[in-house]
Structures are given as structure tokens and as C-alpha cells.
Length: 264
Length: 257
Ligand SMILES: Nc1ncnc2c1ncn2[C@@H]1O[C@H](COP(=O)(O)OP(=O)(O)O)[C@@H](O)[C@H]1O
Ligand SMILES: [Mg+2]
Image (cartoon, rainbow over all chains, first blue to last red):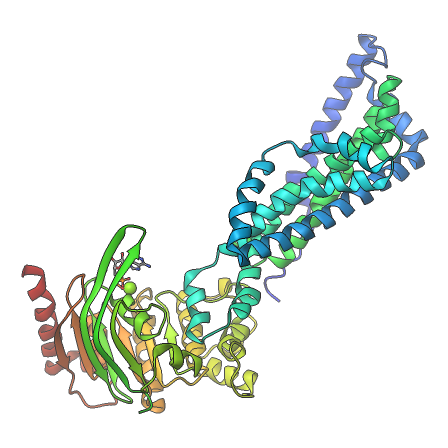
């Protein structure tokens, strides 16, 4: 298969793309370390990298367990939110009334910071996983729904004519043309929604105060435990990066034919 | 009746919000079974629109079209129409094989052996080595050949071709012309070919229909009484040049009028 290029990490790739950011981070870390030491900044204001790494190392299993909980909540919310979003977009494509009433609302909600509903949901559903997954699901929903809806309508008219010229049914057009055509838009929605779902899970946990990385940060915040805060942020960042890399990988496999992946 | 096209009193006006574009006026045209008819005319005249009304993709404002005595919609249902769009319109996520099979898979009629039929046509356009390739891995000429195979795979009675060779370079173009001619001579399908190349029209067709600038009316018809099989050498003959001049004259007449 010619299209399925294997990316080998060659020496020149390492020098060009991997070494520079590592170098940059090392330099920043070193300056930061020296600054906190020389200026004698107290740890409760700004911990030195070494202090953070030390805390990270000593609390590794707790951090990873909490990170796992946050990850599960974020992914569950993402899956539930985007499944409902895609279903709604399909229904809107089928029904004019639904489209007229829902789509403008969705466009409005999409640009509001939905994460603000987190405390409400925690009060309503209690201090467990449910409100947290719900927050992640709700903020995933709108970008995925809007993008899927646009995607389902973005079909090439020439190809549509090919379908019509043999009298393909609307169902055949939907399955064989609309859905595949929408995928680039759907994935663009996913890429927006993934970090949002992590934010949603985190904020939900923060208001719950008793679980996941949000819980750790809630406690650490009230104790001014800066190394714990930094460690949790680090894990959150790693979760966000890993999820984005995963979705980009799936996207590359499925959308190899799309303009955005050609000529690369 | 098979492969017969009859168009009478056809007019079409596009209505797009409050803009009206009259494109076709009182088109009357017959094509009999196995006839090769070319349509030439200035760009923007309404050639694509004419082809789409025949193919049932655009519903004309006025007039009647019959294909094998049926409406275009019914002809679509029976898969009587092979349509080659102005650009290849291949499906980017399907490979060559699946692109060519698509018209068999959609609106499935009989239990045709899809893969062997598709493969026959892929062979005929000399793309056997490329069955697993995707459209973005093909050249312009190869894409058009896939589009041709895809239009032919349902074995339609009529072929509607909208400037299929327009985007190709000179050499690819003339070899594709020969290929089309060979296939046409073998299969005896009725062809309506829209082209902006008068040379191509004379080379390929039995009859050339000349359209005026938009709104398109039929302003002339040229019969091409050159025996077949034809090939490139014909281009140097007197009769070929005469027919080109004759067609050009009709086209130019409308520009000044
Ligand atoms: N879907 C459409 N809606 C409105 N106007 C159209 C549409 N398609 C084509 N037209 C107009 O109809 C005219 C003829 O177009 P077309 O049939 O594509 O011409 P040609 O193929 O001869 O170049 C043009 O003026 C074009 O702008
Ligand atoms: Mg055209």
C-alpha cells in the first residue's frame, strides 16, 4: 500500500523536530531553577523544578491514579457527548423543524463557556462521577454537533450527481456519501472537543473537591501546596497531549484521502 | 427504442433566490440508437445544463425528454444513462476498483457479478495495475479513464459526456479520443458529447449540434459524413478541414449577430 507511509524517526528528524523543544524546555527549566535558588523564592510562591520533580516522584502512584480517574471521566464524557452530538446532527439533517429550532441555539451555546454549569451539576447530582462526566459531555456536545451538521451538508455536487444518475436512494447517499464526506469536519470537532472534555472533567472535579486531579488541586489550592499543584498540572497536560495524539493518529488513518493530508 | 433520445420544446431557467438565469430556449433534438452526437457552443451557453436535463439531474422548466420512451428519472432507475461529469468526480476515499463498482452497488438491480464487470472496464482503460490506487495517486488522464470505466460499467444505452477530455494535454487527449472511438464502435451506444473543441467534435461524431451563447438555442447542425473507423491521420484531409471551417462559421456568425 503506497499511501500508508511509515514514519521512521531518523537522525535528521530528531535534530530538526525533537531536539529543539527539548533544548528549549531544558534551558527554561535551568533558568527557572537558578532564579528560585538565587532569589530565594519561597516554595509556596513558586516551587523550583527540582522541588516539583521531587514531589512528583514521591506521590507518583497517587498522581497516576487520580490522573486515571480524570482521564476516564474525560473520555467517558467525550464519548457520550460526541455520540449524542452526531446523532443530533443527523436528526437535524433529516428534520427541518429540528434544524430551525436547534441549530441557532447550538451556535449560541457553542460560543458560551459551558463549563460554568459545573457547580450546578455537582449540586444536582452529588459528589460522584456523574456530574463530572456530564460536564465533559455537555461541553463536548456543541462543537461536535455543529461540525457534524456542517460536514453532512458539505458534499461535492459532482459526486452527488454520480449517485443520482443511477437513481441512488437517499439512504444510499447518506451512508455512502454524506457520512464519509462529514468525517473531516467531525474530526476537526473532535480536536476542539478533546481538550474541552479534559477541562470539563477537571472543573467538575474541582467543584466536587474529592476526586481526580481536580480533587488533588482543590486540596492543594487550599493548602498552598505549590509542588502538588504543579504536579497535577503536569499530569493534566500529559493527558491532553496523549488524547490529542491518539485522535490525530486515528484521523490520519481514516482521512488519508482528504486534502489536509495530501502533499505532506 | 433502445438508446433513443428525443427532446422537444426544451427550455430551462435557473431560479436561484431572486436571480433568474435562462439557459436553454426551445431545444429540439433527436438521437437514434448508436448515434454519436456532439454539442459545441461558447462557454456558459448552457451545454452542461442541457446534458443534465437529459440525464435527469436538472428538471427542465418547459419541454419533454424521452429516453427509450421513458422519462429521464425512469431511465436513471433502469440504469440506462452513463454520465461523465465535467470533472472526474471520483470518490476520494474509494480506490479505483471501488469507484468503478459504485454504480453497480447503488440501486442494485440484478445480481450482476460486480467485481468481474468492474475489472473488465478497468482493463479496457488500461488501469489494471492501479485497482488499489486512490484518486489522489492518479494523474488527470487516469482519473478521466476511471470516470469513463465507472460510467460504462452499468452498460448504459446512452452515454452523456461533459467535456470529458477538456482538462487533458494534447497527447493524452488524442489517445483518449481514439480509445473512446474504439469502445463506441464496439458497443454501439448512443453518445452525446459536449466539447469545446471543434476538432474533437469532427473527429468523433456523426452529427454536430451548434449552440448559441446563453440562452442556448440550436443555431446549426453539421453532418460529419466521414467513414469509420477514423484516426488521427484524418486531421490532414480536406473534408476534415472543411467541416471544421463550416462549424466555426456557424459559431462565429452568432458572435457578430
Ligand atoms: N445551479 C445553477 N443555478 C443557477 N444558475 C446556474 C446553475 N448552473 C448553471 N447556471 C448558469 O447557467 C448558465 C449555463 O451554465 P452551463 O450549463 O454550465 O454552461 P456551459 O456548460 O455551456 O459552460 C451559466 O450562466 C451559469 O451561471
Ligand atoms: Mg459546462
